[in-house]
Length: 142
Length: 150
Image (cartoon, rainbow over all chains, first blue to last red; front, side):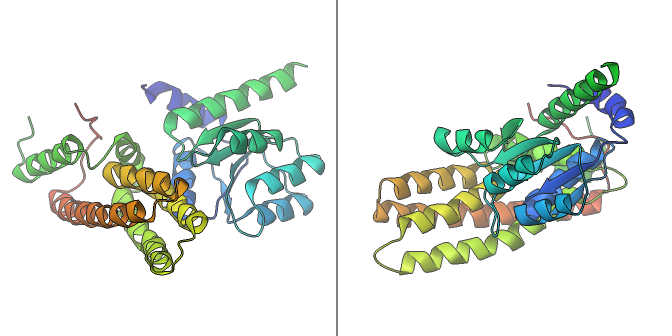
């Protein structure tokens, strides 16, 4: 799938989106951070679910959260549930290595908007950002 | 046709890595993240992978020395290792990781041992090939665009 023109136009509309990457794997954090920067975003990066929840409790909100599933201290399922219980309306996208269907379902049921297999690719991020921008447009028009 | 001999060599090395099944499409994704502001991104990612995954290899080795095998723990370590290997497009390493996990699920200790030995070979072979590749890449200078393998 060719990315080209979509990526360059997206980087303009993505400038004001706030993004949080939650992953205990430094390699994945580096990758996803760079992918998002490629789209004109400046993500904040944390190492586990508890740090994400702590940020929300401090009043920080994000348009998009990329949430790993398997993490120490607080995993992605727990963190997603906690964020939704606290009223977080961010788009939360689960990112996981291939797990069983029941594990994926449990992750989705925690409150995810989407769930993808890691690592994310340009196409997946492009899709996510388009969904986010569509949601933003809907909110503006209402 | 690339005129610069070093770049031509680099193209040949790169094509060989894909043709021989060492790398997959994910490596191309990494190359597409490399630009003037991030000229050594791919090498940095691969370096981080080998640094980080060494710990997991050691964990698995140690777990395989303890009997009876804790297949749940072995699977968890390999799950993580497979994720990292997928991130750099390490195709053969990823395939061995998948096989190892299947042996864990079926409780096949012998299979795990055999598979792990093969995995370590693939891991080491890929490392040597990528080190050689990046050495030539540094000498050749920045390439203009990533080329998708044919």
